[in-house]
Length: 401
Image (cartoon, rainbow, N blue to C red; front, side, top):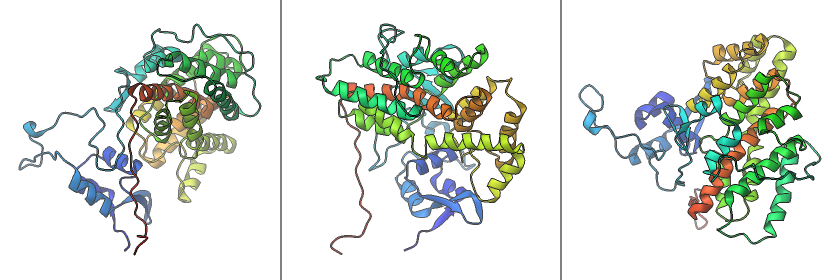
């Protein structure tokens, strides 16, 4: 039987939720969605999935005759991320939460952290490290040069660490903070080919030939802003891999490898290519219109980015007031034509072109930054000793039919 599809307005009415919740259901694959053939920039939602969730959703707000919730019946905001339905994987965490569009790490707003803190301090906060600088005692390795591009070098380094750490006995009493610090330190060394023991953003600036103090600080801010996000496929891969209690190189490699796929890191690569194409053509309006007329998504203006991502993207862009007008025009044109807010993918691409970084630098920067958050999730997963539980629900042809 063919599925029945309904509009966004109808889906929100049946579910009685905010648009952000509907988009979260879609991203978690709890509600199927597809493009509206008559309006390619709009979506349709599967009626059966919507009805299933509307029947199960507990705690509906009691309505007055005017349709508003009574104060006595209005529930307190849940900090757990919402109600778990049957068959949905649940992961408890104390690392971070997003409230009203602000992402908090251990109770501190990530945008506020980006205004003043170095990436090392944010990593220590994420890991609840015993010292404010777990990287201080680390000694540089001489063998940090690997062939290939940045992502290949990072994966090669993680493969080596995986082999080295797997040779020793892994037990629960090991110092996970020191292990995480050494991994992150070697990741940066693999990208920058070693060098002086500077702050991480300064090492990248030295390798990428960024010399102006304001531009160097942009790299610091970008690292902090991307250190942790809401749960996505990469973080889930990290949590599942960490449940094996092996070396931290295992979940870190899982997260980094997942990032290289088209859905995550591919967004940044597409935005980077788009910015390059616009600068080559010199006409952002014409190129943007041609993409939209073909039914393509405008890179960097993906449908419904999270409010937290948008807030961080604007914070990074606004930190570069001296950005060229040609790059600012890309942002203005995209907002005007799509009516949507910018995502972090375009913000990183714009900063990359503004600083004249190597082609893969924005994706590399994002992956290095996310590694701090992934390591925090891996450490938390190991310390709890629990394993993310999920089940497969078979919906295919019955073998005995």
